[in-house]
Every structure is written in structure tokens, then in C-alpha cells.
Image (tube, rainbow, N blue to C red; front, top):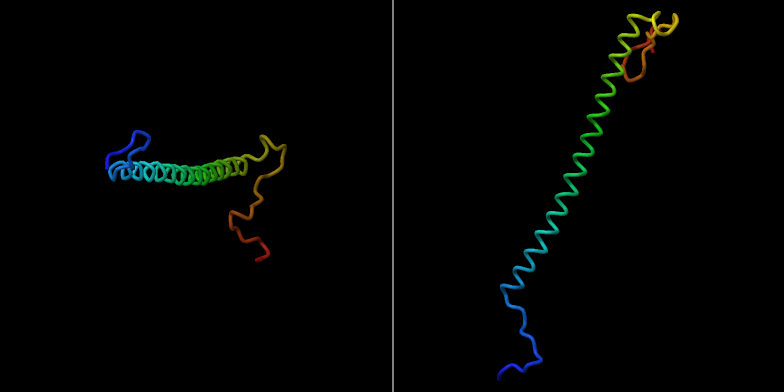
Length: 91
């Protein structure tokens, strides 16, 4: 009933449990890292879009106040579609 020298012992319950928990922990850590990276990249993109829009609105306001300094007489009072301004003919 003894073990022969060429045979290996089957893995113990503790060994299998440690191996399973290690695998699950690594997989969950990788999944969490990917989700966090995606969310941060998405939020940074939205933040940068908002910052660029605010800067464009500031430049637009400055150019509308002082049109003759940099544009040789052309005014920057034209409104863009994202501003939501109704045109003068009501459409």
C-alpha cells in the first residue's frame, strides 16, 4: 500500500485552493485595471473636450469685443451651431 518511488502525490486540497485563489485574484486584478484605465481615458477625453470648448468660447468673446486688432476689420460675431443661438430670420 506504500507509494512507489516514481509516483507523485496528488495535489492537496490546500494547494488546489491556493492555486485557484491566486488565479482568480490575478484575473480580477487585470480586469479591474482594464476597466479603470478605460474609465479614466474616457473621462480625460471629456475633460479635454470641455477645456478646449471653454478656451474657444473665451477667444471668441475676446475677438468679438476687439475685431479690428487681429482680423483686419473682420468681426468674429458669427455664432456657431453649438452655441444654440436662433438666427435673425427665426429659423
